[in-house]
Image 1 (cartoon, rainbow, N blue to C red):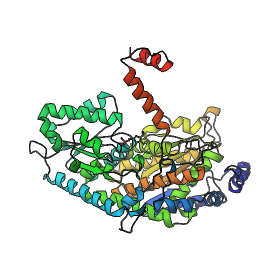
Image 2: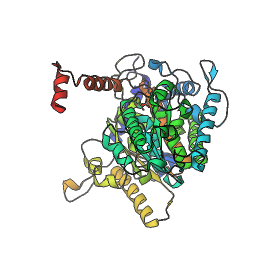
Image 3: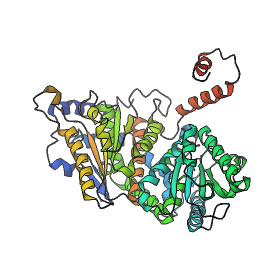
Image 4: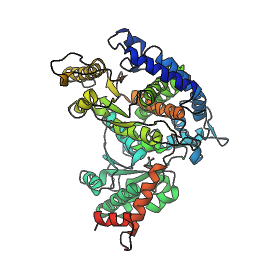
Length: 516
Ligand code: F6P
């Protein structure tokens, strides 16, 4: 039996067809209460989704049929659910509050996790108190995180989101192979007061090594070779490569192959964030994620926030035909959230082969895109309101006005509510046909009481688990990324063959056209 011929899937198709006859009553106020899950300062309201009271139970039946609870248990207990790489996916162990053992190959990983966390927090304290200084004895003022993908997007997002909790340091992020990226940062910082954190799980990623070498040359030019050991630390699993780069093993913080790059903010990959916000705040980030983990593990599927978020996504993607999802944080500090979620969801679930190696035959990850509201309203919202595709959206808002600027805050949140209302309710009567809004365009509200480390941890863990639940329903492995490899290999071989001729093939000729 295939997923699409399964009873739960077929029941949803029938339900979809009957719902199309009736039309959802979005103006029914009771929906606001019925379609709502809230706990610990985070709320998911899905009153503006194209669902009736029957939809969620049918979606939950699909989750049960696909054995979501069983896969969830397997992930938390360290089974090697990333089968193609023969690895566990144990990012949740990094934010455990207790020391209950988590076994991997019959060895408890928690002592190693705690040892790494203790080293990280000691280093953070040393840098923040000025005990660990630069080579000239001056305290650090700038942190430069060099990494890409999961070694960049999470720390970059968290550093900006938690800026009000940061003290004493500016944080900079360098990811692109384009030399402008690193040059732009280096011209802003003082070498004597700059700490470079080179983050690469593999320590083989081309862009990261390029940027790390450029930063190293710059530092050596300014302060001499001896400065490298005070100004460079690394986060990696690859000790040999870190040492070959010239960073001492004692200045390297560990990662593990059982933590995927896009799930790694909670590990030493978050070091730049820890340095900026301090240990207590970083621990609060982990505690928030742990709160979401506990909820995900224990709440009934029908009121389980990540499960429901995942199921609404499946409903829109597989039953209502939506091929994109807009991520719209109405919060400047969450500006990098769309990019972070792009990697999380599209690298995890952008796959068309099942765990068993068959073609899926059904749609998987939608295209994620987004920007900060209200800016996005003045660029692409027209297409959300009246375009030919139905594009569901997640609106992410923060209830507390941290800056005590009620005029700004009211304007921001009113705009968010208005966009959701306009999409769902539309405008049926208008003098010109161009002014008619069909309405019925779905969206979620995700509301944080406050944007603090704890709620940010909850929010990111919410999307991690949403992504995982969708992968289980689609029967794909969320934790590998084989599709990224071919491009990497081709870039390497083109770069290496650049000086040789005889490139008679299409790629050789193409390369010459770009780079004569
Ligand atoms: O883009 C592929 C990828 O492997 C991501 O999954 C990962 O986050 C990124 O590259 C960086 O990898 P690394 O941390 O090994 O440098």
